[in-house]
Length: 203
Image 1 (cartoon, rainbow, N blue to C red):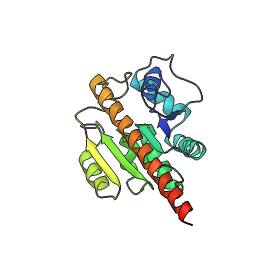
Image 2 (cartoon, rainbow, N blue to C red):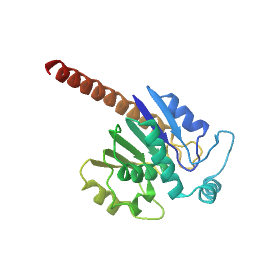
Image 3 (tube, helix red, strand yellow):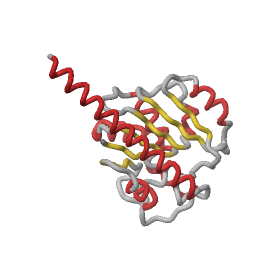
Image 4 (cartoon, rainbow, N blue to C red):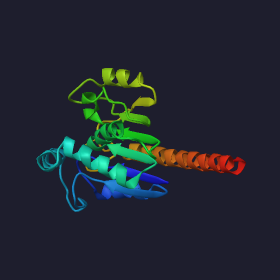
């Protein structure tokens, strides 16, 4: 069972590593940056400037495409800009292994509503976004097959302790939810193997 974690603009931080360590199976992290960001203590404005100056959304999308092609994950979990990059990547490339995307507060998804990833998707929106109305976005996405949208009670960044909107209870809850999805993916993978083995025995 392989899970790919795609970070937000903060990159591979200690908080993200702690989240990954709570998950079972084989996990890997895709970050916008070529180096770990665990030693940096930045506010969101500084982190956003670093992201846009050094990477930007299009380059991050390409990096996520490469990571998915290389890792062949069963489950992809993306945060903010990482969630949007995953949405774009899984819509643009043939799916060989990925069965599901879980995206947390991917605000830029509003600019890519015409895309449709080739796997099931659960999107967890904040209660509101400062720069746009999430209601029509949720309405549009909810009408697409395989896409489930949830409007949480929390604000953008609730899973990241470096965000001003961090919520420890939300982190605990949604970490458990991600682990549940990993457990379900493992069951599905085992069931598919049994079916394949049964078919081979009857041939």
